[in-house]
Length: 141
Image (cartoon, rainbow, N blue to C red; front, side):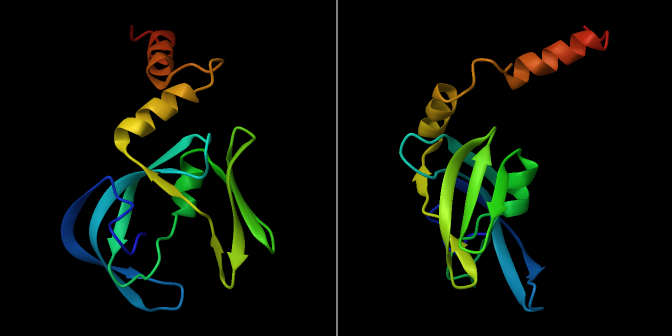
């Protein structure tokens, strides 16, 4: 959830949706969008979608469950957190009171595509190739 629109590449307003917080308070989401972020120079770009824009937030919060669902690993200890993928650390943050602060840089969509291609692992099959491979294996080809 983002409190400001500065990290969004694009967003779509929708009918206001109430979100319950852990403390029981209610926040209003006014839009849903996507963004491309980088956690440091030379690090791969992380693309996120379905991020809610909540005007009542004073900070921007990374959706940990969404990161994990997209294949990233998020590890916490008492002083820091790390975001990694395929055993490569993409970002690290320090504990700031009750939250963990990770510096991020917004990347535009074109840069995100270029960075993603540059950092792709040559040993892995692209998503399209993988789909075609499984389609053929299942005798649908």
